[in-house]
Amino acid sequence: MKYISTRGGMEPAPYSAILLEGLATDGGLVVPEVIPQIDAAVLEAWRGLDYADLATEVLGLYATDIPREDLARMCRAAYSGEKFVSPEIVPLTPIDGGITLVGLSEGPTLAFKDMAMQFLGQALEYVLGKLDRTLNIIGATSGDTGSAAEYALRGKDGIAVFMLSPQGRMSDFQRAQMYSLEDANIHNIAVAGVFDDCQHLVKSLSGDLEFKRANALGTVNSINLGRISAQMVYYIWSWLRASDAVAPGERAGYEVSFTVPSGNFGNILSGHIAKSMGLPIRRLVLAANENNVLDEFFRTGIYAPRGAAETHATSSPSMDISKASNLERFIFDLLGRDPERLSAAWAELAETGRIDLRAELPRFVEEFGFQSGTSTHADRVATIRATHEASGVVIDPHTADGVKVAREHVEEGVPMLVLETAKPEKFPDIVFEATGLRLGMPEHLAGLLELPQRVTEMADDESELREYIAARALT
Image (cartoon, rainbow, N blue to C red; front, side, top):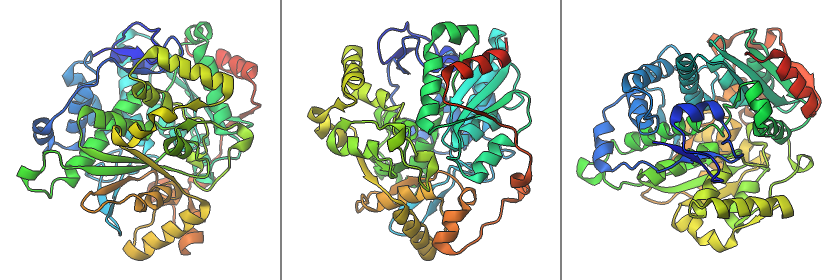
């Protein structure tokens, strides 16, 4: 299995190499040269596997240059009982209205980003050790990616982390998780701006090949295909668990739908690739908050990202994103995997501030299964309250966005699975507003908010960031 760029200017490279690069060498995004296929027989062979073994099988289709025994060891280390609270790793919990929650927040930072980051931490250390290299990770976070990356990479040999976050745009819990880490290889930088400003800085530095090579830069945000591939596992796991109750003779082609709270499009992109592999997914429903650029795109066919001034600070802050980095990978597929058409679309975006794909709009649902919807603060509060009253389950605000939109797209006879985003304890204010409950801190994180915090505040200044990283990068 080799990997190419959406923009056509990169020589095919193996999985180990693209883990370290993040962006493709031509500024595009890395995608598989060919999507591996699975069928009903393969899925049945995987049905009895635990999560770590399933991850080994799925990732083995992508990481073909890594020996299977090494990959199995990494997956076993990533998805262990020491790191995940639930023995299933990803439990499924039915709630009201025919909806089931896919529990992705059982890991060390109580957010779905742990699912990919724990594997990526193992894989990066493995590849760097084989190559006797160092890597300086630069990333941007709107809340959960940063802490998941830092907890996965803290203390790892040959790795330093430079994580950018928007000043004042994360919850107290999210800031405490990141800024309280004292590991020497972790550098937190709070940028005066919004997430999209942080993301722009990361892209600018990653796109400067001379600076990137001089400072051995890599990324672990959702543009890193290692994360996308690891996230495919829980789509397959969820389908297997949802279809366990179906008679063996009726499982082939048994369809489920997924609703995914989305900001940067990485999580739902993994579902898109899983569907492209042959997993029987009927609908992929994208749930946006007030920053609903992606909902507008999937409803109208026009992608028109907004600027920082038009990006709202909401009560589901991890989705406060108006420029979805991973959308380029979907548009690449939409345009027939044609790098010239993709590059033309991005040239149109640079010139006009939008991409007009209305001619392709019928294919969004018919071919790819995409639908979408928007949720507001009032919707989140009402959904958290209603879900708790009906089922006793408390959900976080991002998951509430997903449940609200999922209710609008439930089809009779088709299970609707909503991907959980984080534990509600990370967002106590909106939970209290909705339910009157004061959620306590999980026992293993008691005292987190009182720990001293270590963070460097910085202007939205690329030159200042370059100097900061160059002075501290591992060589």
